[in-house]
Length: 390
Ligand SMILES: Cc1ncc(COP(=O)(O)O)c(C=O)c1O
Image (cartoon, rainbow, N blue to C red; front, side):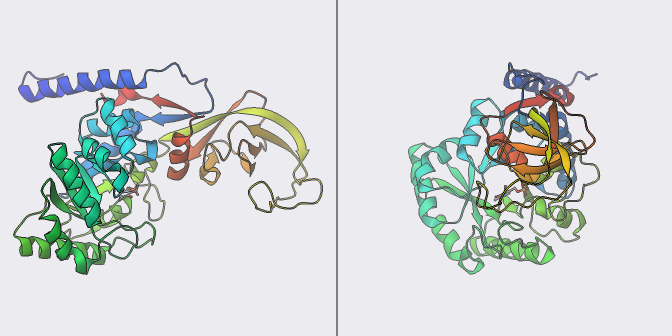
């Protein structure tokens, strides 16, 4: 029931718009019989995003919903937007373009520092990009002037994880130079931890980021819109810290999809797990030996395979392989076991399960496996429960 007031009418209009958008985006001829397929539960994505957004906002931290784990899927982007995030972020400008072309409205952030070759698309499709190189920022400024825009810059500082980022001692000089470029505006600073170096985004690192932000703000007499402290790995710090300092933004992907902490992979209370599921069909079932017959050397991937001797087992072959999905990230929904993977096949020990040709086998996915399955052109993308968040 909606009361007759303008904010409710706005809500109703937004809901109707979202409903029509999702219907258009998720309409396809594929169904739950098609395989291989990845099923993505939009209801779970909506609820996880909403709960995280609510929890972080209560602490003064805005959220960028990161869509790279689903190849910039427009229905997922629409679900995150409906859940209230004020930014959508992706590492690929092509994904951002796909989301915008589908009609999703939000503020778009490119979270991989841009290449020179993509500067035109970055200015065209992203409102903000993460940056660490003056030459690139200068090109962005030049292109933004040509497109009659002002492009937002989030300057990245490297606090020890050793991926992208300006060294702390070079931040002041870099910002001074960026301030001379017309066409770009530094809307804030950010850092990324818990990635290449696996450095934990604890209180020490967040204090350091805050200190850098405050020093720059005082030196240049400005106030940054965003001080972006990191990614899903920051969850525990954000939840527990009594000292958030100047950190007022996080970029969250993995947690929305896994419902788990990315530090120890434990499920987070209030979040739903198993947001996506992979389904593939059985193309051969035979009773065969568990050990290869003959002299064993390297397999097709340069590895020497090792198998446990279980005698004769039921081996079920599925129509997916390494070309479709990261096999280490698959775990069968039922009590079966993956015992071998080639580029086009996954071989299961079906154990106590009676499996026959044509059966469809389901798998839970890690974030990495979900990302790879979404990238495979051979796997159909099927969206479930789009009605649950409208
Ligand atoms: C710069 C940056 N920010 C945020 C994220 C999101 O990380 P996560 O999926 O762990 O939340 C990533 C990785 O995808 C990233 O590279």
